[in-house]
Length: 296
Image (cartoon, rainbow, N blue to C red; front, side, top):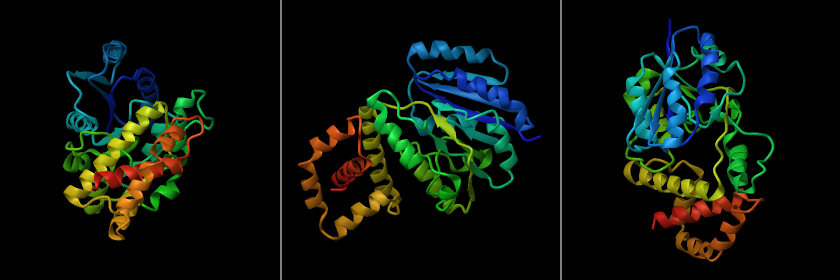
């Protein structure tokens, strides 16, 4: 029988509802299942809540003394996994229904790597500070499988990823990316280079952990820095829309002029992104400005 190890990095989130929802669907996998939760330096209040999970059958809960980051903690979880398949989930995910594991079990013969996708609530959150993250998720991340499959390796996300354990352990995540963002970009490139097929499914999890706009903007800035790091170290990312635009501006000798012009509007753009009606075009412009600044 084929076993499944569900890997959940935990950071300042109550993962008990997610774990219990997964346990209810374990019989649908038709094989042994373990759920491994590793806390990455959370506040004590969250650790107290999540320690209850250690008492549940089929659940392994452990804690790290200090935060090691998104790539390193997933690598650690994978190194201790017992079974042939890994299911990577973020701790702020919610299962869409009671058929989540059943759909993965039915599809696992399609490819050694399966991506289920992410979805968001259809209505904006009542808190205006969360509108930017919700809008970005709905417009940029919640894509149907047919759209994601057109760029199978470029549309890969680590959240809600089902992958054969041997492949993940062989390739691993780049732990030099200590900031937020683009671990999945690097991993997708490694899969493509190795000739490993990625199959996208309509089996999304609901993103249940929207960040306030200032936090999301900081994470987005960190992701831009990681993209530049990958480009300079390994030549990766030039095929992304953002970096491709920046490199064209450099070739045309326009990057400094664009950067200087945008710097005059930066305060206005930031004000829009922190408002109840943010514009993703303004976010794109801000990301391009950050990228041009990093590439100087």
